Image (cartoon, rainbow over all chains, first blue to last red; front, top):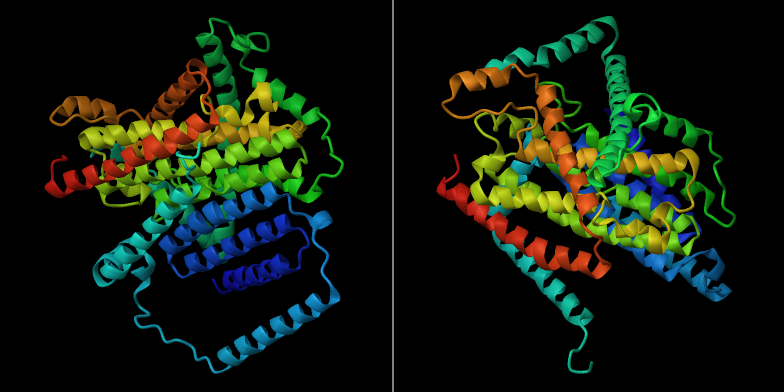
Length: 166
Length: 362
């Protein structure tokens, strides 16, 4: 299984790098999808099957499809990419480098997290997750669902045509 | 239970032990994967060939025609002749198209449908993977096909295929919700997402009978939504021949077109067999409580026959849909999903949960 872990990790890192380095936005999205799939593979290695499947359904099945839609409709490609001046490039490199520095500084002193209950392989299965969500974290769960509903209602209101004007 | 006469668990276990005694565990696992892959591939090709033939014959029957009848008796070999024709055709390359994406798009579509087949239980113990979250796995994997369709439409560099891909994508993404929710309704009744557990729980009655009205509603919604999810008529406006020529696969020719064609039929087979597994008991024979001798007779029919028979009935219903209903408009299609199916589905889940809580099911 260690072999599988290293394979998936390599795929995840390589595809994440390709997301940044590929010129065409569509290719970036494809590499992002590959990255998400390999992360789902990591979840399966951890026996968190529910998390893996939800990760695929939500990120690859819905959000990435939305990304593809937007990029295709805007027809973004290398030919009509806006010209970037030298100054913006230098600023981008400096800010990116600073972010990298901060991240390295933050993870430098990180310690390995000790698993609370390493013998419990079933923690990631749907039953355990359901029990935890609906018992221990019931209130946050319900509040976040209300948040999602309000976002949906807001989106519908914004998208709705004003019937008085027409 | 008498259906244990067709139990494949010991058969698969003996293969597993035999392989493990000959070679180390790692290579035994690889060999098993190869065996399963080849078996599923052969099954996939056979079902694909048969479904294309069946669709033509059913279509001809609906339209009072004879259908293919020249190649072989009753035209049985027609599909193989077509396959040879498709293999011999030139693969057209398009200028200014994204070559790599154009080439991998059909593979993404076909891999997505191939992965879904792995989760389907064909008989007791005859099951490639038995995930704890089997139902969700099928939903997740079948949602990957959209990516292939969108890429195919975009990379063809053709406005018709782009519009076709957009329509397909919008349709698949929205109808996936209804498919998932109607399957969840059935899973509430069983209390498990594992496909083998779902099938075993239907030994004393199929879910569609057990769950009373909510199960029937869920099955009807599943039938409509899965027909739409596979882009079949009357929901095939994504490939509306008269306006968009053929939708996202206009520019594909030869074997690449055949991949899309095959994937469409296999997706139909997969949704039909998932529907049969979850609502009609999969490989489980028809049992009626109290009719001992009747149940005994039913048990002697092999589970594979039950499974294929139920799937074939659902496929027949879907073909019947295609050749009798007029095509929907895009706004009608989205209205049907978001304003009718989804609210009915959400209410149906509540109803089912209430029935399960009160213990009104049997």
